[in-house]
Length: 456
Image 1 (cartoon, rainbow, N blue to C red):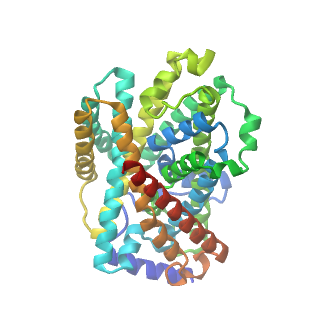
Image 2 (tube, helix red, strand yellow):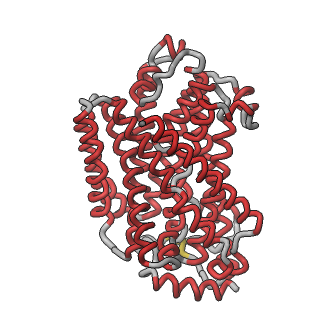
Image 3 (cartoon, one colour):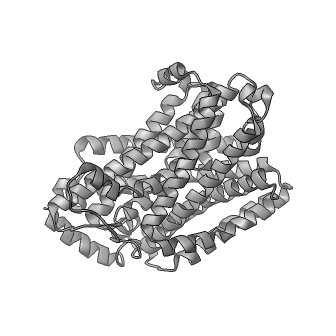
């Protein structure tokens, strides 16, 4: 059966104009040894690039704000969001390994040109919305750390294309290592800040069990914000592509099973790390700001100031805390830049068979994304609150785009014709995936409706 899947996949991959991310596809060798740790290390890396999307600047405000407003109540929401993410990313990685196609290629192969074009446009807009969050996060971090004016900071983010050019010369394994280092910086910074904030860990752990208070209006809105900012469409396209970077004998059923197994381990471990970071963000907000009338903690600048305000953060407040916060924000923005560029390339090649150099893709996408941010900055005189509002709106659009990737992913991985008998989703996985898709879609519709209602 595996041989049939492999033959079918090769034919489909040809229809989709060659391997996904051809420059790095199948370039990372894996050992022949059967040791668990050695294999895990060889397959580790793609999960880290995916996990970046679950700890981007959009997550920061919702998680810290949720802790500041409702204490530890929403810990269960972070847990459930992370479990859903693990399920979706497992299916995306499996799709890439088994079919040798990424989600964009598979979608294009199984739809008409017209539907494929619509899906491509929606997904490209989602990439730009993600890029807007990266631009805003990076620009605000530069302002907080070095006093760079927002307009100049936004403009400087265009030059991260030079960073990407350097990274592409180093090889994909080096890119993975750099991303893991930046994630480690974020983890260490917030772990340190949480330790000195001394949260009530008993209350935090107890709130991993969902409570009825979550369904109340304000709490539910914040919970939906956390869910909506966590599960993003571009991660599904990215993982289905970079899961193919490992080089192994795809004609060998045992090798295929090994690849799926250890790629899943890598994904779950890295997403568990993202779960820990999001928990730390909420713990920080709850321990330092809950019950102190901190409704103004809706912007990065206010969070930065609050971390050195003795009246809000208490005795642990210090310039060091706020500086570390800004450093972590900058690291998060750079991480998202790397993964966003790779995803953009996957989508463009998969949907419309257009291959262009990564740096050209990066430059064009970033220039398009910078324009609305600069306009917003100029109109509102560098007011950070306006940028944060634009960031939130970009997250709302991501929520709208989410079903356009979740639905085809679930359909493809539940099809024996596409996945083969061995790798098709088990019945319970299919049911769970469909349930998550329906629930998340309804929740995202509610987020959009509430956003529109607040505007009018």
